[in-house]
Image 1 (cartoon, rainbow, N blue to C red):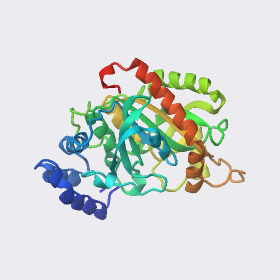
Image 2 (image 1 turned 180 degrees about the vertical axis):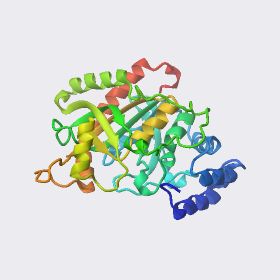
Image 3 (image 1 turned 60 degrees about the vertical axis):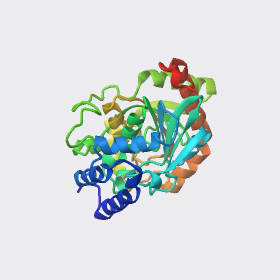
Image 4 (image 1 turned 45 degrees about the vertical axis):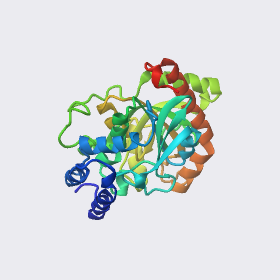
Length: 329
């Protein structure tokens, strides 16, 4: 069973038995089926979405995923309703330092949003379909835009620690080996069997973000680039980083790509950016320090105010163009 363990499945089954009474009578059966197939069926994901919607009147249009050290972005949300991951039936639990583990509904720039304080990673033992499952929950809750943030190593020599890279494209290294969040039977209720990824990251929102950065006076700290996700949890070797640089990769991380693939599969508009928390060492005698998670979290916290303001201002511009003003606070 790729990327999953027996103990992980047992934990999820036990959780289903505990919380199943809060949902419809088919929950337990559907959950078992999802576990057996190592995926989440449409019915199970709809049950999760309904569980959330039944407990809040907020109907979010924007979904946000907070990266390592960037959890305080969610602290800017007002009129909140908070769900701990462990209290959401059939939801995984984040095990990584710097990821709180809460789903927050509320308002940001007067727009209804839902935000993940903590995401799920392949290296935690979760298969990619489970890592990106919350994106499908967002879709069924009513979200139209996904805004994903992450901490990444800067491979482009022009990048400095603390810079922000607007993701223009990605290289799906894990997908080269056939590991995809869309692997297995396709449910057309989510999206097509063969979704295109040519324009996965919305060019209009990137343009807005560039103008926002200029208005903030941080245009020299903003770049456009290509992101790649590796499986982790180890950081990359010098040889691997050299290979990635040759391929045209500008920043390296361990998330986001499978979430974006899932988002585009279900027709969400995507905007993403990477906070450069360290510079990648591409020489054996490099003066760059070895990457470590403590540095990632520390840099994230030191730049979260800037990242939060950037995100808020982009959302403010989306609000001006929002096609359904009735859902805006």
